[in-house]
Amino acid sequence: MSTLPITFEDVAAAHERLRGVAHRTPVLTSRTANERTGAQLFFKCENLQRMGAFKFRGAYNAIAQFTPEQKAGGVITFSSGNHAQAIALSARLLGVKAVIVMPHDAPAVKVEATRGYGGEVVFYDRYTEDREALGKRLAAERGLTLIPPYDHAHVMAGQGTAAKELFEDAGELDLLITPLGGGGLLSGCATAAHGLSPACTVIGVEPEAGNDGQRSLHTGEIVHIDTPKTLADGAQTQHLGNLTFAVIRERVSEIVTVSDAELVDTMKFFASRMKLVVEPTGCLAAAAVLHGKVDVRGKRVGVLISGGNVDLLRFAELVQAAG
Ligand SMILES: *Cc1c(COP(=O)(O)O)cnc(C)c1O
Image (cartoon, rainbow, N blue to C red; front, top):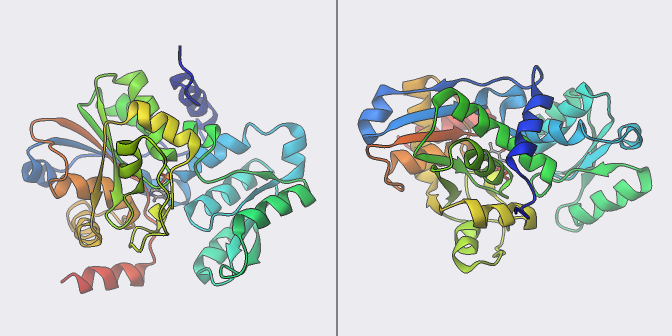
């Protein structure tokens, strides 16, 4: 008798839609990381996903389910991060027009990447305009369908396919740990865990500067905060979604936090030990494990690496500043 927004069947159906389209990313292990933590760690490498993050899964799963009318009308989103590129790429693959609302001062690389995937970029002034209102107005005026970055059942189910693959490849786990922003990834992965490894404890990891998810889980109400200042730009959300929180409060045991310094240390670990380029937000779950925020000793632990989109000069600066 489930009244949750998504079920395991939704995740399994999303997985079928993504077959042959999304990469089945590798699950890597590291003797060094295992020795350091006393656990058996399985890293799911969504930094190696198409467009560089798991967000491709949810975006494609959502647009693939458009009606013919919606496909003819096009898709719009107001996120400027990995979700924007995920929407632009998915729309191109499905022959759908994409409009991305971005701040006028968005980094040129992001604008170019989105345009490179065939998306139309519409700018707004982040100091005087409300991006959500603009997105909704454009959607109504131009007959576009709005796909938000996390609070949407099809997006959540798509993100859960990353964990489904991890359980299929690694077997049942004691713990599954994922990054947490608005909760699309965590809610989808927790749903996959419930279906494939019911005894697995699911934990989300937020930046220390923005622990709204942790407070929401404790209080039972969605806590709103100001945009947190953190290197984890993919997790700079002000609050969880209604749909994502409904799943998280049922299926997630705990939410822990890590500092920016711990994220940079983890970026260094991935680059030097595992030859992986991981963006700061992508390091959240691994940072919690490597810095003792979760008791993993003696356990089989899935660790989701969520993305690898970081400017190379920025990467070098962060690593160098940390010494
Ligand atoms: C969006 C994003 C997250 C957070 O995902 P949510 O579904 O918003 O919780 C984590 N890591 C990366 C790399 C992202 O792009």
